[in-house]
Length: 249
Image (cartoon, rainbow, N blue to C red; front, side, top):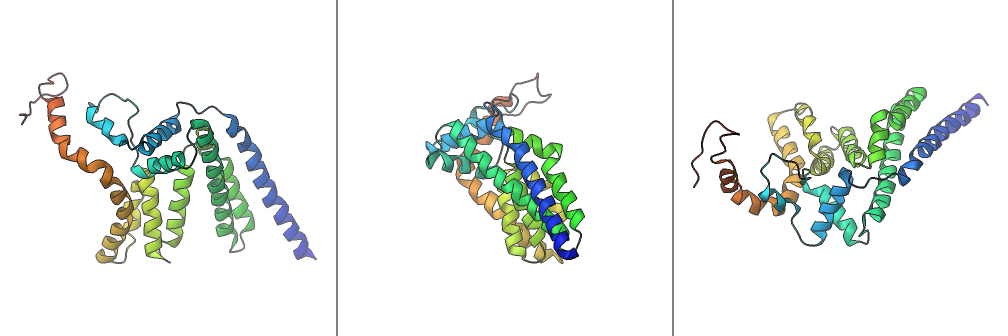
């Protein structure tokens, strides 16, 4: 009897936190994110859908002034381009679709953290961890501006979970996260240091880098060929910026 009551309490508390998290996030669907970072991500995806390399604009950049150039790795833009191709052609429909997707991953992370903490009998610890995830200031702000960090973190958390159990799957998941945004590289040396030997560390690194490198090559191959000459032509003679001259070819 006591066990049944405790089960009811668990369900009520868990459901209450989930419903409150959804209630807090509901106004996000009505927030204006026009000209936020996510808008420019969608815009680069639209260019890809039209067959334009978004990184080609970097060729005209002086690398000094910010003109909202694409600064993420290609996977996030490829996702936006795929969304445009599949029917989300204007920003308003795209942002609604993205918010639904972010919300799914947001709830998934919260539930994962709860069950991971509660599986050893630490029920209240699980609730606390889940509550912290749903209502921490950073998470609410990311939801407000509709950035994709929640999706990226989902892959990173799964990668950490499988790191020792299923190394190849963990490496691919981490590569997916790294292929969308670069901040995962800060954690990469720590994870690789846990490898049992140098050989294991090398093949883990190969699996991790495969996705970001392969997805980037079609976009950067032509640009990298001409980049030294363009940089040289930009910087030569700019004594107001540098204190040396570089001979131009």
